[in-house]
Amino acid sequence: MANLLITLLSGGILGFACYKVKVPGGLMIGAVIGVALINVLFEPSYMPNETKTFVMMIAGAFIGCIVEKSDLKRLPYIAKPTIIMLFAFLVLNLLVGTMIYLVSPLDLVTSLMSAVPGGISDTPIIALAMGADAPKVAVMQMVRQILGIGIFPSLILAYHNRRKTFEHDGHREAFTGKREKSKTKSWVAFWVTVGIAMISGVAGKHSGIPAGAFVFPIVSVLILKLVFDFAYMPRWAKQGAQILSGAYIGSSIMMPDILAMKNLLLPLFIVVIGYIINCFVTGKIISKMYGFTMKEAMLITTPAGASDMALISADIGVQNTDIIVMQIIRAVVVMTFFPQIISFICTFF
Image (spheres, rainbow, N blue to C red):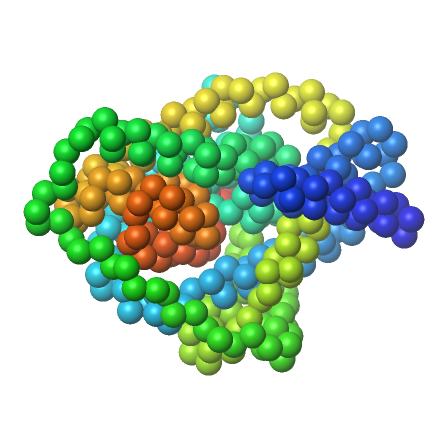
């Protein structure tokens, strides 16, 4: 109990500190670093094995809650560009992951999970459940998040300004309406959501499906949200899960793992180049085929979160709400299906 308390305190304090200074994924990354330092220096850290299952259930419930009924109304208008976006991300994931596997000492599942365009806090804990090297996945995902939030908007704006061309007259009209968010925010809805996530998560864990404890809560909470409009997960629950996730990953890090981080330089370079190429190429395709402006299309293919994208879009003068909806769909589809595809590939090979 004393070791558990030390682990949670060290992870929580540094995680909160990183969050306050706006480090991307700061709660989880800070918790990983805090617990890893304690573990390497004093070796007292401890987290129960059930932690990763619990975190996956909460994370799955949170993803299930982010879809709104109003988002479904936009599906007929954005279905085709969304399919292209998802297909491009899948191809990118498999190509970049394979390249990392071929040129680095990382195993196949770690390489592929490192390139998943998913959540910075969700992907490492799923990777851990699939047998990957979670600390390395966490580092790769943090760089991808920094890329999406800190670098891509500047690249997109610079590219747009350099072209100095007007969009063609026939481009699609931007949808600027607001997403209609559910007003269900009660303790009863919260506990019902947690209960559904726990029951379905346990069923998923014993289903034999890779990351089933994560996938089943997504689906069950999505049904609860869209059919009954009675799903609610407060932000603090997700934040608590991020700290627990980081603490669990940090507790598995030893000195050899830290020394092995030097092997990530080439994989990181491959990830950065891969996402930059995808942003420009897939963005060009979506712009030409479906009438989005080039700036909108490049934002669609930017590997950032939906909430981050809302702020980024406004900062560079884009008010198209469809971009946020497509990013939400990406988050749900990628985190639900990409781990299954990766698991199948790793099992096959």
